[in-house]
Amino acid sequence: MSTTDNLVEIRGLKVHFPVRAGILKRTVGVVKAVDGVDLDIRRGEILGLVGESGCGKTTVGRAILRLIPATAGTVRFDGKDLFSLKPSELKPLRREMQLVFQDPYSSLDPRSKVGDIVGEGLRVHGVTDRQERHERVRKALEMVGLQEEHMRRFPHEFSGGQRQRIGIARALVLNPKFIVCDEPVSALDVSIQSQVLNLLKDLQQELDLTLLFIAHDMSVVEHLCDRVAVMYLGKIVEVAERDELFRNPQHPYTRALMSAIPVADPRAKRERIILQGDPPSPLRPPSGCRFHTRCPEATELCAQREPALIDLGRAHLCACHLRQPEGQVAESVARVGG
Ligand code: SF4
Image (cartoon, rainbow, N blue to C red; front, top):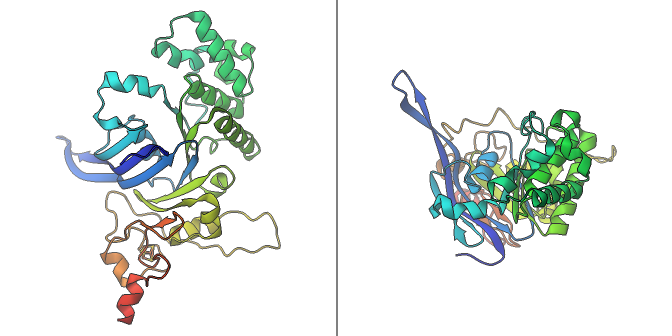
């Protein structure tokens, strides 16, 4: 059921890709990139979606925007069921949902001037008046710290950080409500990353935007996001408010990701949890808990039964047999004991 607090509500989202082989291109398997994701994105928040590469986080972002088709599930945006809309009904909503790409080099057409790149969405959405387009592009560039004169230049004349600012201006020019930021700083130098992150934070507050911020490491989301969802092999394994998650991570996978965050104080020690092996293939995900092949706490039950994502209290959700709401005994512990 839709609540007014949530701008986006994702239920049972699956995105599977068939694997074809042979001359006849027969389907020989299915990559379960996203395999049953439930997630809410509240109005005006920055929700971080974190996981190793290949876990399905980018696919979730693109499926929400209907840039790739979903296999099953629903996504409600501002109360509207996106997957049941006809193209003509979807078009006005597209203005409200934008994407900032990971790679600021390949995502900008090298043959187009910045003014045309940023103004392209306005043209597509029927803003025919050149003067109005010019003014809106100028304002969008100004919001990201660029000037009117930059409209006449080509992408190769800009640094990586400036190109990402152009990508952000392109997303802002249509006055969206919601932006999916797909690893927007991972291709940038560390020295530039914080500038772009601060810009996104300022814009989110000024324009009351809702952001889904996709990242592969925890340190990037630590200072930016209001809440964080952790994803492993096509599933959400933990969701909590940022402070709660960083103070009290529950899922063994989240703990491993956190242990990799560099500590500024050389005297402070954090025990690094090294996960064994690579993530399994989403073509053949492990039985039961998908993390059991790498989990340092796995029990027999973990290979047999999939844990549900449950609320441990304080809106802290976790999918692990060993974590239960306060006062309840963990299932595997109960089994061993009884
Ligand atoms: Fe580890 Fe088992 Fe919890 Fe999965 S359910 S995270 S394998 S302890």
